Every structure is written in C-alpha cells, then in structure tokens.
Amino acid sequence: MQSKPDVPYSVYIHIPFCVQRCPYCDFNAYAGLDALFDAYVRALIAEIRWVAVHAPARLRVHTVYFGGGTPSLLPPRAYEALLLALRDAFALAEDVEITLEANPGTLDLARLRTLRALGFNRLSLGMQAVHPDDLRLLGRIHTFPDVIRAVAWARRAGWANVNLDLMYGLPGQPMSRWQATLQWALRLAPEHISAYALTLEHGTPMAAWVARGLVPPIDDDLAADMYEWTMDALAEAGFVQYEISNWARRSTQGQLWASRHNLQYWRSDPYLGLGAGAHGWVAGYRTVNVRSPHAYIARWQQPPSEPPRPFPWTPSLVHMHRPSPTEALGEYMMMRLRLTQEGVSWAEVRRRFGIEPERAFADALTRLHGWGLIEPIPGGIRLSRRGRLLANWVFEAFLPE
Image 1 (cartoon, helix red, strand yellow):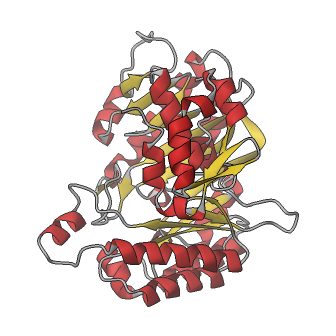
Image 2 (tube, one colour; image 1 turned 135 degrees about the horizontal axis):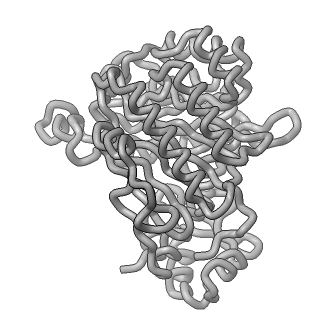
C-alpha cells in the first residue's frame, strides 16, 4: 500500500501507568509501578533518539499523542524532557497537535498550566459517566465534580481544545442515566466528544462478573438505542459526527475540532508507536513493542550498536509484519469506512492499491447497498446511518477470508 509521500507522521507514546486498573480495561496498563517512572522516561527518550538516527530522513511530525494508562500521572518534568527529545529528533510542525490523556482525578490547576506552557494543546479527559453507580462499576477513581473542576482549570490554564471520553451501554445502566451523562457533558462545552459502547473484553474482571451473574449482561438493543439517541442529541447540539464514535464542534472560524491524531489512524497514514506495548504503522510495516514496562526498560539499557534489520526496526519490537496487499486493502477499507463524512474515495483506493475497487468489490457493494448499510458519495461510499449501527457487518465484507 502506497501512502502519499508528503504525508507527515504522527507519534503515539504509551504511558502504561495507572493508580488502579479499571475492571473493564484490557489496555496495556499497570498499577503500583510509580518507582519505574524515571527509568521509563529514559527508555522512551532512548527510543525516540534511536528512531531519529536510523530513519532514512528527518521525519516530519504533525501530531503527538500521549495515551495510556493514565499519562497525567507522570510529573511535568518528565514531559519537559520528552518534548525536548521529540523536538530534537523530529521536524515538528508549527501547528503540531500534542494531546494528553488524563484522568480528571489526577489534575490540578498548576499542573495544567505547566503542561500547557510546555506545548500541550489538546486535553482528553476520561469522564466516562456522571452517576456515582456507573463510575463505581467502571472502577473510576474520580467523581463528576472532579470532571467539572478539571475542565474549569483547563480553561483557566489556556487549553482551548478539550475532549470528553464517555461510555454507554453499561450493565444495568438505564437510558435516563446515559442521557444525563451526555447532557452534563454538553454543559461543560467541550470541543470534542468521544462516546464508546462498553465491550466485555476476555480476561477482564468485568467480563468475569457478568459470566458469574454478579452484574447483569450488556443489553445490546438498549445500547443501540443509546447510540441512535446520541447521534440525534449531538447533531442538535451542533456537533458533527466525523467518525463512528467521535463528534466535534466547529470553531468560530469554521474549523472542525476533530482529533488530527486519530484521523491519521483512520486514513491509514504513517505513525510511530513508542513505549511499552505501542503499535505503529511505518514504511509499510505493522509494528508492536514489547508489553512489559520492565522488559521495555531493559531493552533500552544496552541496545545494539547497529540494528540487525533496517528501519523501522528498534530494540523495542516483538513483532514487525508487512501486510499482504489483500490484508492491507481490507484494513484500509475498514479504517476509512469509520469516517462517517469522508468515507472511502475510489480514486485513493486506485492510487494506493492499483485496483479498480468498484469491480473488485462489486458483489459486496451490491449487497451492502441493498441492505441500506452504505450510501454513495461523489467518487466513493460511506456508511449510512443504519450502517453505523451495523458497522462490523460492513467491515467484514471487505476483509480477506
């Protein structure tokens, strides 16, 4: 698959530390490892410098995203060192988007002011819910008043781009509680809202609770009703749904406050994944780093003097895979169809993959159009409203068997 040569990179940096693990979470996150903070930051800086030295050219970067885990647990001095390393290693765009994921219970005004002064300009708060019962079920360490304070402090500290992460379809959650969560989120006037249906991931405590009958199972029909109500409520509030689970307002200049970093994923454009367990898409390879923070740190204490494989290999990697043309095409279609406004451009498919997509996908397109799951746009297709509810069915039609 050929990306446009002029597309800048994005950089994802994984911070795997948490105060406590949430019972629904299957991310690469660990509680009680505060003693590793300094060593982990040194390892991240070593990885950043390695990539800079071994990349074929100085990489242009237009977004940086610190995800986790709970990245807001690291002290500001750690981010000062990390951002300095990034600026030394890469050609950061003048308008680079730098996002910090944060738990509202880990913030204060002084910390937000310091981080903003260091160059962070997008804050993603894990609000999730309003009702104490929902927050307790999710194992969150914050309360809704913590969210109110965090947003107020962020505004005072000069953050103009705030996202709120929300979760619906929780076991035992009635429609009224989800509606209250979204309505309160709107009152906080964020630029961006992400709303995800809870999924029970294998091996998580919550999946075990449901299996043992300790909490009720997820009601998929109710979750679908919640999603439809959310689409209508956010549209009425002036938000644009630009991705299946993401909505953004427009600025006073008419710009959409979309997550430029996440658009990089959905457009299948290149990104580096740095840190323990991070995934990347670089030079036609899918890359995966070692998950354990201890193992990640150890790999950067004595890295080899010369890489045994060319870029994008690093000492962090445990997996480096070049998708087949069929795999890459299926992944591309799945990711682009998540973009509910842009959809898929047939011209871009032809440029990247050298195929005639309307001929290659003729049977699938006929079925999906007939079921009302996709709709035509000039030069391509996108999901219909019904297709957003049944997106996985649509994606499967384009994936290799």
